[in-house]
Image 1: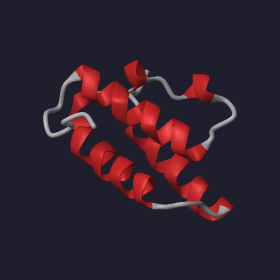
Image 2: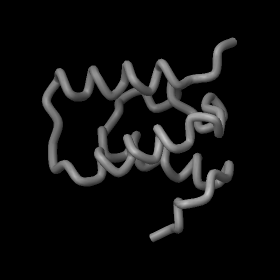
Image 3: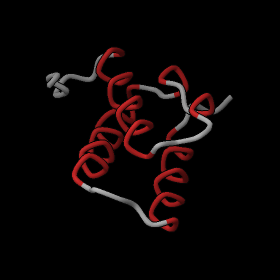
Image 4: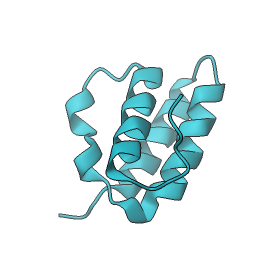
Length: 76
């Protein structure tokens, strides 16, 4: 397992990919590591750890997670 304690672009990519994988997201292109800034690293790491601990997710939980991720995306 990678050491995710440091906010690096590589760790950010690991976190985003891990969340996408665990949620079995159908359209993974909408969530790319480059869409997120390291300023949200701690929040993303918290979300990643929470997602990794759960075996399954309700529709409401998935919606909330995706909305939270959306709020952390870089503003264009």
